[in-house]
Image (cartoon, rainbow, N blue to C red; front, top):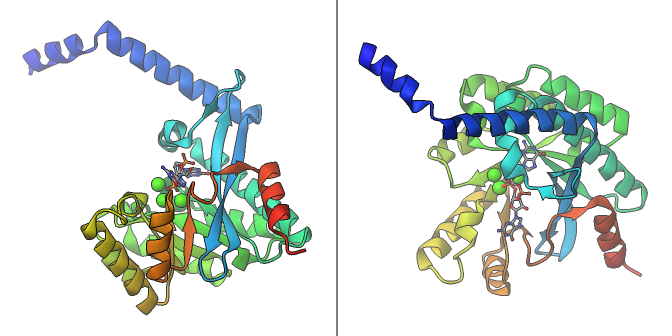
Amino acid sequence: AKDEGRNNIKLFTPAMNAKVMRRMELEANLRKALEREEFEVFYQPKVELRSDKVVGVEALVRWRRPDSVVVSPDEFIPICEETGLILPLGKWVLEQACSRAKYWHDMGFDGLNVSVNLSPRQFQDNHLVDHVGEILAQTGLAPHCLELEITEGVVMHSVDEAIETMNRLSSMGVRLSLDDFGRGYSSLYYLKRFPMSSLKIDRSFVADIATDPDDASIVNTIISMSRSLNLQVVAEGVETKEQLDFLRSKRCDQMQGYYFSRPLPARELTELLEGLRPA
Ligand code: C2E
Ligand code: CA
Ligand code: CA
Ligand code: CA
C-alpha cells in the first residue's frame, strides 16, 4: 500500500497539473459564460419526407466565446454535466427554444415543433417536470409542440423513476424522442417500456446506408420496426442525396442533416422559413 501511495504521487506530473488547471479554467469560464449570456441556441430543421415540409427544429446550444470563437457542445456539455452547470444551462436552452418556437408560431409557422436535448442529469433533476410546465405556461407554447430528446443514459440510476418522469411529461402533452437509437445496448427493451412518440436513428448508421449493405439493412429494420410500434422515425446526419433517396424509398418519416441545412442561428432559421412560405 505504501508503494501504491508513492506511485500515485508520482503520477501527478507537471503535465497533468497543467491539464487540471486548464480544466478548472474552462469550468470557471463556462460559469461566467452563462452569467454573461455568451451561449446561443442554434436550430436545425427537420424535414418530413412525405410532404418535403420543415415540420420541426432541433435546438442545439453553442458557446460564442468573447474572442468570437464558436465552441461546439461536444466540448462543453460533458463538463457542464459533471459540474451540474447543465441544470441552469439546460433550463435556459429550454426557455430560449420555447419562446422562439412561440415566436415562429405567431409569425404563421404554427405547425412547427421544437426539440430540446435533455442530458441524464437534467432528466434526473426533481424540478424538471415543474420547470417544463412553468416554461410552457410563461411562453404560451402548446405542449404538443415541444419534444424532449433523451438517450438511454437517462435510466442510469433507476428505470422506474425514469419512466415515471416520462409519464408525467407525456401526460402534460409534451412529446418524447429516443435519441441516438442503436448506439447503446438495450434499446429494444427501453423502446417497449418508454412512452416515446419518436425515435432518432443514430448518425453512425445513416452515414453508410448508401454504400454498406449491413447498415442499409439495419436502418431498414429500424424503420419498419418503428412503423409497427407507431413511432415516428427520424434519420439524423443525412448528408447526401443517395442517403435521402434510400430513406425515402424505405418510407422514413423525417430527416435532419447537412444535406438540407446545418444548425442555424435563430434569425437565419427565420429567413429559411420565410423563404419556404407558400406564396
Ligand atoms: P445530438 O443530440 O445527437 O445532435 C445532433 C448533432 O449532429 C448536432 O451536433 C448536429 O449539429 C450534428 N449534425 C446534424 N446534421 C449533421 C450531418 O449531416 N452530419 C454531421 N456530421 N453532423 C450533423 P452538435 O450541435 O455539435 O451537438 C452535439 C451534441 O451535443 C448533441 O448531439 C447533443 O447530445 C449535445 N447537445 C447539444 N445541445 C444541447 C443542449 O442544449 N442540451 C444538452 N443536454 N445537450 C446538447
Ligand atoms: Ca438530439
Ligand atoms: Ca442524436
Ligand atoms: Ca448525441
